[in-house]
Length: 140
Image (cartoon, rainbow, N blue to C red; front, side, top):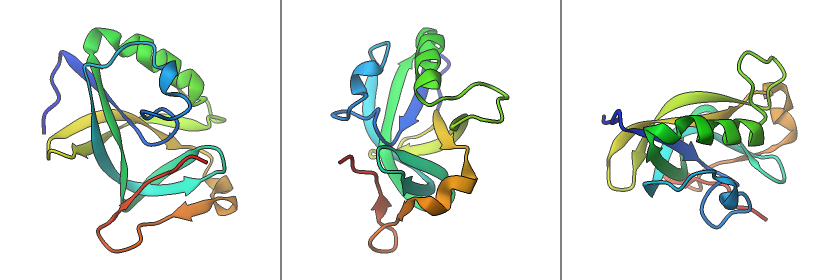
């Protein structure tokens, strides 16, 4: 697994991906963006996805930035995802996860895990169509 000290990664799986409605909100330009996946379960809330721990392969993107961009990127994404450290009413929590890129590179990345688990029964769980397939969120 690699995670260079000069770089920081964010794994996104919904509205912040390329060609999605919040792509323009990234405050810095990435060094690279790659297709990637992590383990989890994905739910469709209607207008955005909710990721929770699980064993499905969730498809998304790994955005890599210079380490000096971390604070600026995290500040903007934390606001979008309604994350404040130690706040029990967060919509999402920012956590470090292991992901794998389409080329097979493994990396650690920041991602946003849905925090309001009691709301999950109201959402549609997205599941792969066959074993070992990827799950992904598609915007309307």
